[in-house]
Length: 260
DNA sequence: CTCCATGTTTAGAA
DNA sequence: CTTCTAAACATGGA
Image 1 (tube, chains in turn yellow, blue, orange):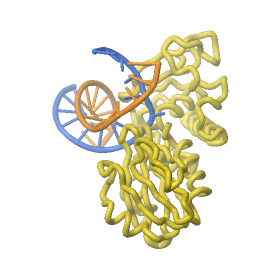
Image 2 (tube, chains in turn purple, red, orange; image 1 turned 180 degrees about the vertical axis):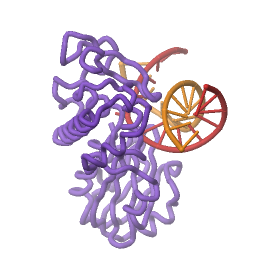
Image 3 (cartoon, protein in one colour; image 1 turned 180 degrees about the horizontal axis):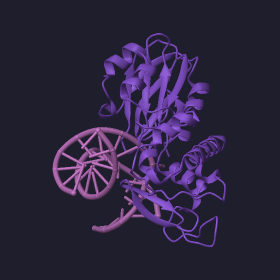
């Protein structure tokens, strides 16, 4: 489920399994995911080079190769990182594999192929150029208010707009709206400043909790909406019923009795 | 067969 | 300019 927590967990795993390792071979296995780069460029930039650090902004993960630049990964709907061995078969749907000199390897697996693989000399500059909003775990209260104020559309649509704020997706967005007691389709001009503050706190709590539980849906609290994302399910917070609707073109699960 | 899915972009309408 | 909808992308699971 590649939203901010999933990408953060992937970043932490890459930090421990790939940083400090030297790339022996780069295998681009699905060229269609390359975005503004080529297998030649990736091999030239990463081959024989030690990975030095990781970074993340919203749903974008980046791995640094010293001063040369950053490998950028976007997971789309189904992307994930898998550790492996260079002498073993790569996992099914591996789009990119980095084999390290010690025999280990890191695979970027993506069955649905909606993500992207890029190269950028300056990751922070890339974030700027793309016009991504601030990371949801970094944004300050007053900035978050400014981002949501002055709009009339549904609050969920704005939360999921990566150019407004980066990292919120449909599942954890619904979760935080549920926790804050706000309807996903509520027009933003009907949301008070205090409610915006509460929304920010709910988002931070939901995202941090998800990260603490390694973004594993099975491990999320029973009191959450996530295990009940089904039309007609019992609401975990009241005697009501969870409903599925569409907001901003995305399936949305919420409780009409708990949220208004 | 049908419907749905964690994301993003684009075209067109209002 | 803002906002919304539908469609497209490609694939897999229920």
